[in-house]
Image 1 (cartoon, helix red, strand yellow):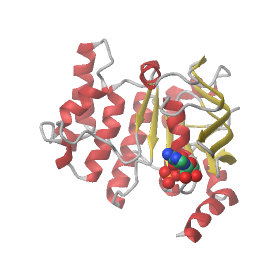
Image 2 (image 1 turned 180 degrees about the vertical axis):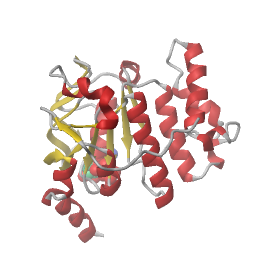
Image 3 (image 1 turned 60 degrees about the horizontal axis):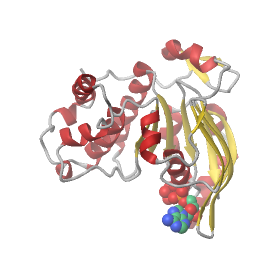
Image 4 (image 1 turned 30 degrees about the horizontal axis):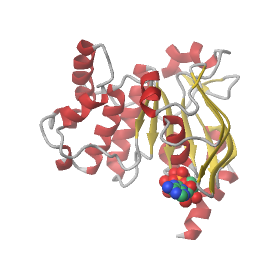
Length: 278
Ligand code: ATP
């Protein structure tokens, strides 16, 4: 059965030590979010270079279990670089990335995904010549619990009913929005503890974005999924995330609760900066 629409966008709840806001709908997560233990993901003083280009200049970022945290920033700020470094697709020059209390800095991507980090990459990147079902099975290929994989396949097909209707279709025949859903569902098939979503709204029509927002919210609440959401669509990001970080030119220039980010000069500057370039 598809997830129901969420009941609203308002945040009511307690602000925790970490700055996360626990909503009524996230009651089951409150203990985790307010837990004083290690964050699920903890990045410290991370530097990444592409040759001479110093793309990340010492960023610090953390995500606690049960949170949706957003990473905002204009084109070229370093958002995808951060995601790729977390996934092991880029080797950091220095700094550390801890996941569930263990260093994953410099680990190979396949080992990191086995640790429980799933990625829905920018630009969707589904395998067009495979069917929807095959793409999803690929997302669960590293799992040993084969029975549970089959069960999850059915579950995600029901959560994303448009995929359920097109399960034998080649992925290239899907619309952009459907391919985005497939990329997210494929990441979920790996049964991640942390889901990285890189620009899920890119190129999507407003109605598709709205439906995707509801689905991401429902997955986070009902599956207690921890999410790091990279977005240029500030409105979408701040309707989903309880707090976030703003990246500009490879540095975190601001971090705060959703309400603080909405009015933050750093957010406005980052995006006005982008607008003035275009
Ligand atoms: P976008 O929203 O446009 O994807 P972003 O915030 O994800 O932007 P990144 O793609 O992480 O930004 O890029 C950060 C910086 O690194 C930019 O200055 C970019 O030009 C540079 N960069 C990214 N990829 C490469 C590469 N393969 N070689 C050299 N420089 C790169």
